[in-house]
Amino acid sequence: MNNVYLDWFTKDEQFPFFIQYGGHDDDLFLHKHFEFSELVIVLNGNATHIVNDETYFIKKGNVFVISGEANHAYKDPHDFKICNIMYKPEILRSIGPDLRISNGFQALFVIEPFYRNFHSYKSMLNLSLPNLEYVSSLISVMIDEYTEKHQGYQTMVLSRFMELVVYLSRQYDSQEKSMPSNLMHLANAISFIEDHYLEPITLEDIADSSNVSVRHLNRIFQSYYQTTPMFYLIRLRLDRACALLKQTKLPITTISYQCGFNDSNYFTRQFSKVFGMSPKSYRLSQ
Image (cartoon, rainbow, N blue to C red; front, top):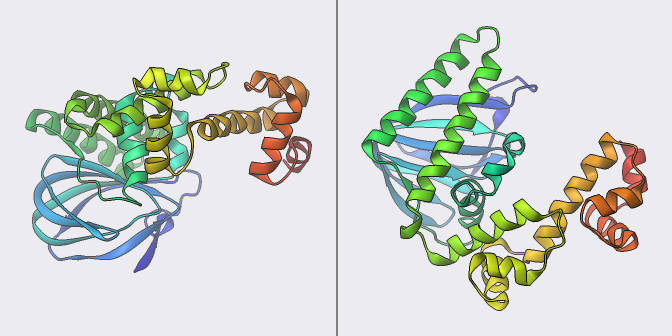
């Protein structure tokens, strides 16, 4: 098993993004992406997709994301053509809050690729032919811009990529009924947390938003995400605090309250536990 690095495809450190058409006539070796994710759209044909120890039949219209933690390969390709979009996960942080609370976005780009690292999960987005044609047109524009590299091409490519992310998230939402109920309960919970993480919310609030009991919410969060809903909430608040510590001169106590912590001492303890230093030390290190 080999590591694959994004700088094999692009040397532009200021624009860590790569897109291409991929045609596979032969098996592709088992490999792991090093610190980047890959969005794959199957444009034609079929193949067997290996992810860690599981195998999946993939065909025209399938869409999935492979995270940096997964080992994957293709075998037995037949008229197999895909589009590979390789990107640093941080690029999705620029999306709007309205998309971050989308169940389809959370399922396709966050939960599903993470879950496949630990469990068998065969469900994936399957585009109808008209929807695939629309996606193919977006891809064609992106590849032309990326290849020609005219002035402003990075902005054009990213804007089209965001359009693609929104469109695919909506399509995932539309096939929601065919998804495992636990996955959608989890997507509902994460969407609610993303939308309200700076507000005073409780575990019961999160469970109610997902129409499950607190006990069941904790169980599916642990099963799919290897963490608890409250730690996920705390981590979002801490990430926001990091941004404020770097970008502003606000007092640490003020930052703690703005990030949803009612007790600044508790904020400092949690920050130190996660990042290995106090908020003050973190600010001085930037």
